[in-house]
Length: 228
Length: 228
Image 1 (cartoon, rainbow over the protein chains, first blue to last red):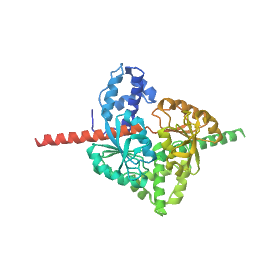
Image 2: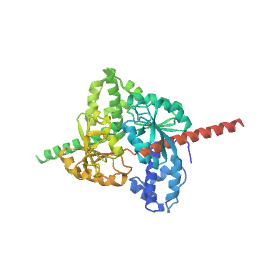
Image 3: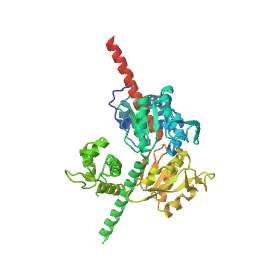
Image 4: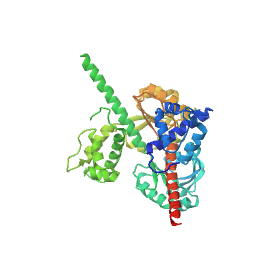
């Protein structure tokens, strides 16, 4: 695998899509797939797929396509999901609880092993959504990161605590942060951050819907004018 | 506001960031802000900010900057969040419940007014996470969309049901879908879709962390070799 650091982020994002589609095909008992077929399923061109994969090595055979099992294994290796990751969660509120119950993580090899909160009323109690997990006090964060070799953390604390928690996580040794707080986290450049701001996503939808509606309105006006 | 449809999606995404930062500044009792200051806070160049805003009209004054209240109002108008949107949720499982309790939506003017599920054991009962909402049976989806003029929907059903639910939502009149199922939804081009695949996001993090670690490892090897 090449790791020259010049791989565009969208290509890496599409690797996840390819993997998802390969898993679907594998579930359908398929053995081979062409870049064209993958492309059709994902609404991408086949040359895009070939170009993306070429960043990581030589896969597939011209005229034959890709061996689904082999490409799946390779993409998992590239994405680092051929192993199990210990993941911790900070914030046992509504969002944190829901995330702890989300089964999609475990399926991909992400094992949630610890949950932290600053609220003493929550500490020592199992999470309702995932009773295997007992909430620990945030003061135990650093020792747990080290003891359990945790490299990934989900940050589901309120906005005003997010930066401070991110700082503590990174200092303790966490290398990747999955951030749900609506703030831009300031961390060292060797720490990976992926952010989901749910309100911003809805805002983007309302923009698109507003645009479409004003389009539709202006279209109607135009047509009415034409008729007159 | 220009609405020629040629506005790049990243510019619209950044509008949300600008709005968030303007709200922070407004909370700090500030009146004016320069594109340079906005840029510094968001790690963007000032010319990027001016270029993005220029897609939507003429804002701010050279040498003076932007009036925070005015720009906030304008961006809200552009994003369609100067009004209240009725939003429905399909899927009253763990993820759906958590989303229903997320306060960030209401703050932006997104009012969750109805929750649907196909599980008769859940129907008729309030959501634990948001007792104001009584779960309705999925069969009532279409009539509720019309009666309550709902244009936005959060789709938090399992992967195998997501496409069918999306189809029903769109047919009923929903114009924007916030999709949490790990599938590519196939909908008409006039319907906006925003997807969050939580597992894929973690996968992207594990990729970055793996890359950094293999970088670190190869660096160590290189240095060791140099020393020898």
